[in-house]
Length: 137
Image (tube, rainbow, N blue to C red):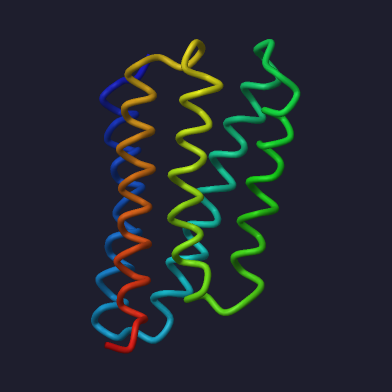
């Protein structure tokens, strides 16, 4: 059951996305690196949720594989220049949410799926805005 506390904490998790995004537009030197690092941590956390679900529910084997792959994929974001990964990280949040909707909609409550959607698309939006700040326009 999703409580008010879950909602507050979930939305509070978007604050660093948008705060660092704003800092990137204001020219703070490491804001984009910090943003992508935070995004990688959160994406890995989402993989951990999938791992847990694959251990307590009878789910297809690929759910456990995707859960571990999210962490490895997020680690790749940190291995090369940050601005190349912002777009892919944003798409990754959306892709993972779509995957969860397809694979876990029977298990996750509608409330959780709605909250996950808000958080995933919020994170993706912040990452896209930061990516736009790196364009030399």
